[in-house]
Image (cartoon, rainbow, N blue to C red; front, side, top):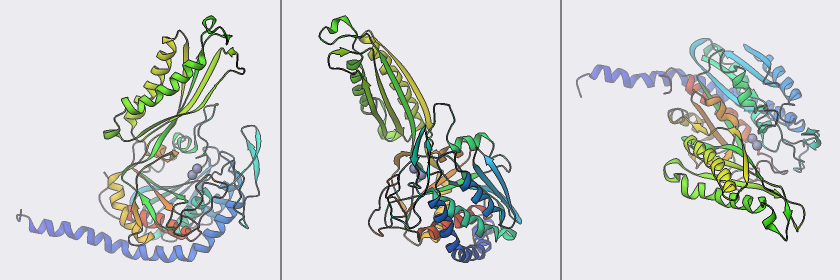
Length: 439
Ligand SMILES: [Zn+2]
Ligand SMILES: [Zn+2]
């Protein structure tokens, strides 16, 4: 193995050379983020006070577009996926094309944080007027991405590659009856990753976890897919005292609900493919004690970390519902609504970016965590290219967990805004640095 000492010596030199090129940029970036911190806080507070629901983010988009337009070298495109905004920053040196993503939408929640800049908004949500609040922290995501864009734009002459900034609408959309998908899917469909051709996408999410300022992630699946089902069991109405005159859809719906759990316990390979959750959240039918109704309805959700298990669960829900109904002489109509895909962290990308995140959060403050069974549409950016996504703990209570995302009391420790901005900037510099592409 000592046959090619010169080659080996050169190979070991390469990372050192690359590091030497990146180090000054990383240091300059750190200073720029520190200088921009108060602006990031101001952006976050304004967006927090003016939250907008999915696909209604017009004021948010205008604010983002104006902020981007003021950054040197930034090309801005508005109106992508209805209300999305894209910024493109071409660096002064050749290199890869990477994208950073922030979601922009708020939730139909009444804010109860008592913050001086609490939400003042109301809006229509599926036909009803509702309070609106940034109860999932997307205000922070937008502010941190603007901060990162600002810092990187000031380094553009020395930047080896291109950074695309994706401000995505409607992450909380969750699909609708008219078939409109959530914001990430719609952005991808409208070609947001095509020109320039994006090679990888990074994203982050704040949460109520502690200790505040730590970054949490894992290689592989990190968030579950989320699909919904609706089953209508059709029977035959009758007097409750004479059930033999009808076909009882209530009893069959109950049997179907019970059998759903055997998909998890008897069919899915939980050892090799990870967890599966099938939840029936709605079980409805009938309106009086002594009437067997014509129909009953079940609605539920399927969560998994494996596309293989996801397909199995789709097939099993349909088969069980139809066959259980058939066994009692009834019918079941099954509708599956395909939601968010599994969100997967590319292992090679995680390995490469980890030191940059440590640089941003501090030594020992980047932690490996188990996956979570909630779903997020960021996975839609990962069809065919590597993606990476991390959680930024932002509990306002320091070492104790804060109110969870989507709670009326959800808010963040604002000092994490600088950590998250640094994380985006340092991760970008890391993947732009001259080295073989991620495989
Ligand atoms: Zn959310
Ligand atoms: Zn969210």
